[in-house]
Image (tube, rainbow, N blue to C red; front, side, top):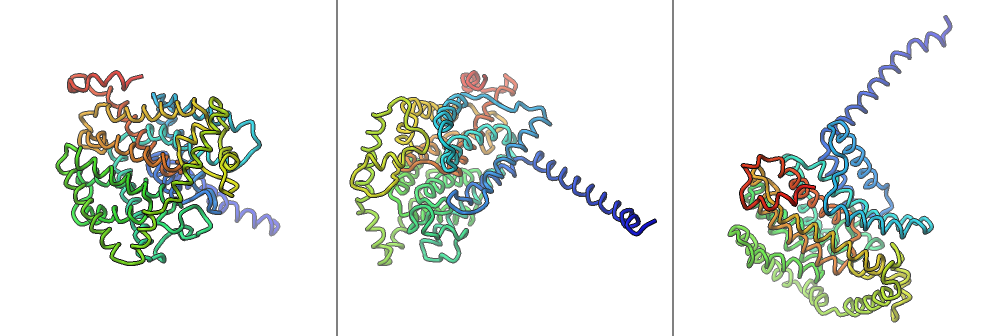
Length: 455
C-alpha cells in the first residue's frame, strides 16, 4: 500500500468525526432557537437598538431578523401552529405595506429607500405577528420585561454619562461621532436622535413603573432606576421629550386609580424637579438649558417645512409622492434654506405626502385597532401577570407617548417601532387566549368583549 493510501485511511475517521460534530452542533443550534424563540426575538430587538443604519458595520440587525423569522416559522411547523394569524390590525398593516411597495417597485433600486420601507412598515408589522407566535406564556413575557428594564438602565446610564461629561463611559463609541445622525450635542443614545432616544426612555420608563408595582423590581434597584429616568430625559435637551414625559407623569398623578402608581409618579416628579435644580446650579448647564428653551429657529424651520409639505400634498393628494421622495422634492418647495434635502419632522405629515389621503387613513385605522387592544378582557389566569389589567390601563399612555413624539419626528427607527408593535402583538396574543377559557370562569363584565377576540 502506498503512503498516500495509508494517509487517506488514517484521515478518514478524523474527517468523519469532525463532520458528525459539525452536524450535531448545527442541530443543537437549530434546536435552541426553535425551543427558545423569545431569546432570539429579544436579540433581534437588541441588534435594532445597537446597530444604526448610518454606521458602516455589518447589517447584524437584518441577519438577526431573518434568523428570528426562520426560527419562528420552523417552530410553528414543528408544533403545528398557524403560521399567519389574521388580526383586525393586519388589514391596515397589509394595506400600508402594499401601498408603500407599489410606490417603490417601479423605481430604480435604492438601498436607503428599501431600508426605510423595512424600518417603517415591513419589520415592525412582522414583529407584531411574530410576537403573537412567540410570547404565549408568562415566562416569555417576563423575559421581555427583564429585557425592557435592562435596556432602560443602559439608556439612562448613557444619557446621564453624556450629561455629566463622562463620555469615556459611553458605548458604542459611534454615539459620539458628530458625522452620524442628529443632535450630537445632546444625549441621543444609539438611535442617534434625541427625540427617538427620549420616546424610548419614556416608554421603557412606563414599563419600569409597571414592573415596580408588580414587585418585579424592589427597594434600592427600583428607586435608583426610577430616579435616573427623569435625569436621562432631561439630558436629551429636547422640549418635545420633556413635554411628553411631563404629560405622562401628570396623567399618572391626576388620572390614575392606583394609589401606588400615583405615589411613584409623584416621587419621579420630585426627583425631576430637584435634579433640574441641581443641574441648573452649574453656569454652563444653565446657559445650555436657557438657550434650548429660548431657541426659535426650529419652530421657524418647521413652519416653513410644514407649508412646503402641504403644497406637495395638494399636488398629489390621492397617490402621494412615494417612499423617500419627500426629502429632495421638499427642498424645491421650501425657500430660504440651502439644504439639498429637507425632512418634515412629522410622521403623519410624511404619510400624507408620501402615500396620500389613503395612506394616512390606513395609518389612523391601524392606530385605532392598536388602541382597542387596551379594552379587551384579561384572562383570569393572567390577572397577576405582565399583561394584567394595569398594563391594559397603561397601554393608551404608551401609545400616546408614541403619537405625541411622532408629531415631532418621523418614526423611522426600527427599535422604537419594533418595541411598540411587539407589545401590541402580545396583547393580540392574549386576546386569542381568552376564548380558550371555560365559559363559566369568565366574569359577566368580560363577556361583552369575547366576540371581539374571535375571528
